[in-house]
Figure 1 (cartoon, rainbow, N blue to C red):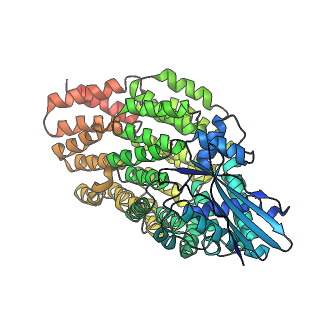
Figure 2 (cartoon, rainbow, N blue to C red):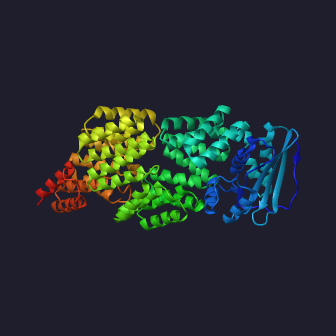
Amino acid sequence: MHLYWRSTKAHALTERDSVVLADFINTTRDQIFDRTLKQALEVDLGQSPFLNVLSDQKVRATLKLMGRSQEERLTTEMARDLAQRTSSKAVLVGNIAQLGTQYVVTLNAINAVDGDTIAEEQQQAESKEKVLAALDKAASRLRGKLGESLSSIQKLDKPLEEATTSSLAALKAFSDGEETRNKKGDEEAMPFYQHAIELDPNFALAYARLGTIYGNNGESSQGIEYKTKAYQLRDRVTEHERFYITAHYYDSLGDVPKTVETYELWMKSYSRDAIPQLNIGAAYSTLGEYDKSLEASRKALELDPTSQLNYTNTADAFIATNRLDEAKQTLRRAFDFGMDSVNLRSLQNTIAFLEGDMSTVQRNLEWAKGRAGGGGLFGGCAAMAIYYGKLREALGFVQQAVEEAKSRRSPKRAANYLAGMANAQANIGNLKEAKVLAQQALALDGTTGTQNAVAAVFARTGDSATVQKTIELLNKEFPQDTIIQSQRIPVLRSMIEPDPAKAVEDLEPVRPTELNYLNPIYRRGLAYLRWGKGPEAAAEFQKVLAHRTIVPMNLVHPLSQLGLARARVLAGDTAGARTAYQDFLALWKDADPDIPIFIAAKAEYAKLQ
């Protein structure tokens, strides 16, 4: 192998400068190099903490703003135009040519404004099988010419054949999967990743992508299987991709502390990468640490304002911390950017619900009709109706959400809507209806996730044996899951514990994460009520009421208002109890009149007059 390179005047980049990768120019007529070499170069340069390569996501978002198709090839001229629009300093153009039986790989970094060459490298490969090694050497030398320190390159320069795969065919299948996923979604991309691991059973990145896709689609066991395989092969990737694989592995196990630790290390090594900031924000939210979640989410949005997830997570964190004006501003920025989705409109509906703006909710419902995933907005409206005790109205929304999910061949999502309605029915005392809905959910999807979702229904109906089986199943399948082990299992145990003092004790492990969904606090309040401890129960219910914007449409908010009234009766505070009952009854002024807990509340209030 011979090295060819041309000396040019070096205009080194700085750590603040970004680079756009153009599509490779392939003059060999061999389609195996199409997209494949660009994918390999993205992975190779991605391990550099110095070079800031514009992500595919930012490229697609900018092309949309330019009125260009995302399926167009990113030619040198188009890449320069895009670079100027994103304030990127350079465009990196790759070229592969064939000379007899040999191949020449050229990398040329050009100034985005005037097209002048900043740095150039060439490598010659003796055969097709040596092309990846040639590309790797060219990229390594180019990093130095562009300004990266020798120590950084030596530390973070894993050879491409080790970082991805030595099989060009496997890499082509993977790159085709990446392109298909970007354009058409997860389901259409899966066969390409599957083919990649058939061609190379040690292709760690392909396993990682499959693990993510299965996890996103609710297939948690298969997701864990693929993520575990990727984790076992994590030495066959770059440092950057190893963080990605490790974090997703611990996340699939539900091990939040290990996940957070990995993201912290990732951020330390790659401070300009928005992904660890985004994901650590979500992890903090899982722990109920909303201030930390907001800080990380805002940083992610600052680093990458083209990612819709950064807007949704930031707005969600603003809502949780009761900063609704800033949440609205964040959503407005996303819509102004041309973004639109069920998730964005669901958050818009949440704010509208908190502010009593039902016209916005209705407008978004009209938008959702016939859209994939639109059932999520109908599910949200069901939660709003449940909040005010309108169970019959809620059931209508749930049925629409279930039908939408079924039409999209998503039984897990349909089962989840039914499980939510079943829990609501159980909490307000309609136990027969709750059990029927729970069984319908299980008929659609009998996985552990759905069994977990309906376990509380069986606890309320007195079926302790079924709840105990679910606890055993959760222990077996999720031994490292932070929320399952420290929250969900203790809550279920407390619900089937006949001794209220022991039920309160069962809920002690929940305290560090109890703000993430508030239900454990409500359950502790109910246990204190059963125990006859009014002041202690009142303190728990007041804690729920003090966090109105955490899961705003959760039924525990109005039920905690009722719980507070009952706790004050126990404590002998008649005046306080009367006020709390009045607040609950005002909230449920339009509730269905036949709800058991509503009938009981009115009778209890009448006794205080």
